[in-house]
Structure formats: C-alpha cells, structure tokens
Image 1 (spheres, rainbow, N blue to C red):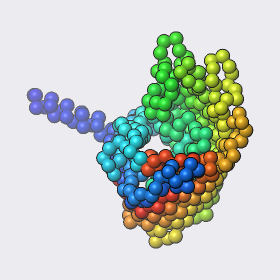
Image 2 (image 1 turned 90 degrees about the horizontal axis):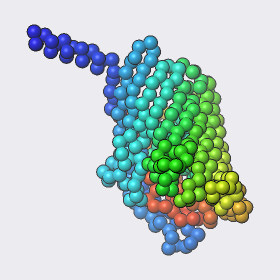
Image 3 (image 1 turned 180 degrees about the horizontal axis):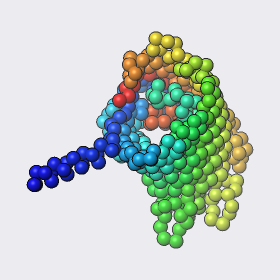
Length: 395
C-alpha cells in the first residue's frame, strides 16, 4: 500500500512538473583588445595610455521558468545575471564595480503573466538601452557599439535598466507592433538609484518624507515588410530632499530602418534629452547650474556579405550641450565611429573584429561605458579608441 501511494505521489509530481519548463541559456562574449583615451584638454598627464586587455563584453547566464496555465495563458520568471569571465569577479575593465554582474538577476529579473497578445512583467528590466531591429550591431554582434554609448551620454537619462518596475509588453498576436511596451516604476535605494541623496524619494523613504519619486516610459515598435520604426520615451521626477538638489529628466529617441534584404539593414536614430534641476524645496523647477539638454543622431549599417560574413558600420554625432544658465557649452559635442566584421562559425558562435572611436571636442567626455567596457573614465577632450578581436557564443 505504501509503495502504491509513493508511486502515485511521484506520478502526480512528475505530471505537475511536466506542465512547466525550466531553461538555462546565456551568452559568452570575450575579446582581446587595445584601449586608449588620449588627447585630453588638460594635457598628457590626464590621458589613459594605450593598454592591451582581455575583456568581457556583456557575458550573461539566464535561468527562466514558464508554466502553461491553459487557455493561452502562461506565467513564469526570468533571471539574467551578468558574468565577468575575464576575471571571475564583479569588477569591469576599470577595476570598478560592474553593477550588471554584482548580484543574481543583475541584468534583468522579472515575473510575468500573459498570453499571445500581451503580458505584464514585474521587476528589474531593460528600457531605454534596447533598440531591437533598428540597431542589431551592439553587444550581440560586436560586443559593444559607439552609437548606443553616444545617446546614453551627454545629460543622461534616469536609467537604461531599472528596478521596481511594472511593464506591459505587446506579444506576437499584435503583429507589426510586437515588442512595444509601456512601463512605470518607483525609485528605490539600489542599482541605478544608489547614487541618490540619503533618504531619497520613492518606495524606500523614511517617515514624514515624500514617496512620489518615480519614472515612466514607452517604446513603440513597428515592423512591416522591409520597414522598421521605433519611438522611445522616458520621463522621471525625483523630488527635493534636504541633502541635495533633485531633478526632472525627459528623453526621446526616434529611429527608422530599411531592410534591403532579410539580413541587411540601414537605419537612422535621432535623440533629444533634457534635465531640469530644483535646488530648494520652495522653488519650482527652474534654471540652475545643472540644467542642460543635448541632441544628436546616428546611422547604422549591417550588410550581409554572404558565406557567413557580415560588415557593420556606424556614424553618430552629438551636438553641443545647450540650455544651461550660462547658455550653450562651447566645444561640448562629439562624433563616433564603429567599423567591424563578423564571421559565423555556427548558428550560435561567431568571431568578430571591431574598431570603435569616439572623438570628443575639448569640453566633451563621451565614453564607451556600456557594460563597463572602458578601462577607465577618459578626461574631457580625450578621444577613446578601441581595437578588438573577439568571439561570442550563445547557448
């Protein structure tokens, strides 16, 4: 009798487990590269001299679980954790903490519930950074790219990967609009919010303090035939606390692309970002030394050369910083280039060669910061140059 009960229990457990699935996946991305940031306005003493390095560029491991709830409904969890394969630590190329590798689910961590039309997701998730088909060059093909780093520089956005987030994502049944999303979230005291003044605003404030600090945004994707379109918008407001000035930030980027064959695309993106500061509790948001706005554009090309070879090219330009209390900031613009080629060794593995250059004017300091790829923070006016030979394996 006991054996029968044990067998029934085992079969029941196996049946329940069979309704869900657990997947282990990820990416290993490594290169041997040279890095330098030279020509600083302050002189050679502020330059980061050329060095050769073994660099991790966005490696990660993914654990996901999905359960079929019936009627087209599904639920699950997704945990994407960054890894630094080059040094087995939580530090990036500059020896500083790479926040994308410091904890489980450091890149993304979410629970979700949805169907083929849409799903709701809760947790730490990518937002502004992602570009989809508009710019496939990025970390997936060359380990990094200059265009993405350019529109994340300047006056900045509140964050590109944010915690405490509620997001609704359009799924495959929405057709040409699949991948579109709308989100909102609440400021906390970790990750992107760790630099906020003590006490902060949002979900972790103390007694008798304003808990209204939050962010919101949307991404509209549209793909029909050879045409691809994207609109990205993010707004945030961190209310005043006595320990420091707080801000409003608004950012928008728009992109369009043309797939002239199934595996080749040419695209363009433009961006505008604005920061408005508040320096005392009584005043409205007003003109202060921290106020600024920036804009720019970038062009991306991915061309299939056949035989497993692809060519990649980018050009981007950031305009000078505007809107400060003293007017425009002279010589605060920059231009950037990425050139590269990939060779597929299989469906999951490819080799690549890449050249990245960011040329800063004397008051500018745009960097290749994404994924802690820089070997240090270049000084104003310094031009960043990276030459890399790498390999990426998706599993």
